Figure (cartoon, one colour):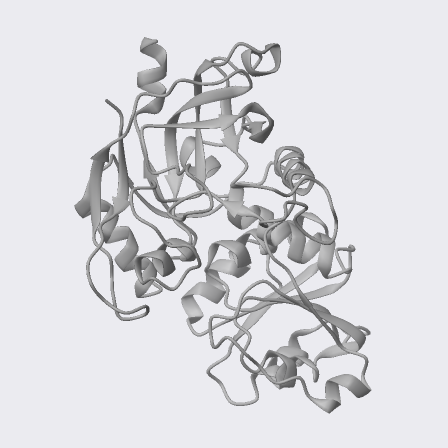
Length: 361
C-alpha cells in the first residue's frame, strides 16, 4: 500500500503544541471519471505546514497527508478522455481548489481549499500518490528538475498574485521593494520582478541573504535591523526615480510607517502575510499620500496557469535551499527545523520515488 506523512495528535494548546510526524499507509487510489492518480516525485514545505504542526492554521487535522506543493507522473486515470490525456505525463499540481477565475476571490461558498493537513481538502503531497481532478494539473515546465518543479506552485502563485495582480506595478523600469528575502514567496517575486524588467530591492536581517538576492538579480538591499534602514534604501534607488512604486510584503509590522516614506504618492503595499504580528498600524501620513494597502492571498486556477506559463517562457528556476529523499520522518523533521530557525534561502524539498513507481505500471 502507498504511504504518507501526517501529523499525530498529542495534547497541547495552539501555539504551544508541536505535533509529531508519523508515517501511515493510505488506501490504493481508484480514480473516478475525471480524476488522475499522480505518483509523486517531489514535494515541498511551506510556512503553513509549520503552522499546522503548531495548530496555528485553520482546520488543522490528522490523517491528511501534509504539503500542498507537488510534482509527479500521472500513473493512472479515470475513464474520461480529458483525464486519459494526462497519462504518463509529468505534471505540477494546482495547490488548492474552489477558485476558478474571479479576480476578487474564491467562488466556492466555503472558500479556497488548499491541499495538505487540513479538513478542507483530503489531498496532500507528502505521499507516494495523490488523486486529483484532471483540471487541477499543468504540464511541468521541461527546464525544471523535480526538486525545482516542486518548489514553486504555492509560493509562485502567491507571488504572482501579489506582484502581477495586486501591486499594479509589474512594469519594466519600476522600483519594487521585497521585504524578508529568503522565503519562497519573496524569492519567486524577486525572480518574477527581474524577468519583468523591474528594479528590485530587498530587505533581510541577514546580509548573506541580501548578497544571494543580488546574485539573483536584485539591484541591492538593506538590513531591516539597521536604524533608519529606509533612508539607506532610498540612497540605492536610481537617479531620477528616488521612490519605490510598490512594496511586496509578507511581514506586516511597521511596513506602512517605513514604507510610506519610500513609496511614491499613490504607491501600493501588497501584503501576502503578516509574520511579525496579525495586525499593524495604518497611519494618517499614508492616507495623506494616498498609499494603498492591498491584501493578497494565493490565487485562482486561471492565475496558476498564467504563472506556470511565465515560468516556462522565462526559464525561471526556483531556488531550492535543501532537499532530503523519501518519506523518512527524521529527515523531514530536519527540514522543519530549518524553517523554524529561518535558516533556509529558498524552498525545502522532499524527493520521492514516484517516477520509478510510475515506470513500473
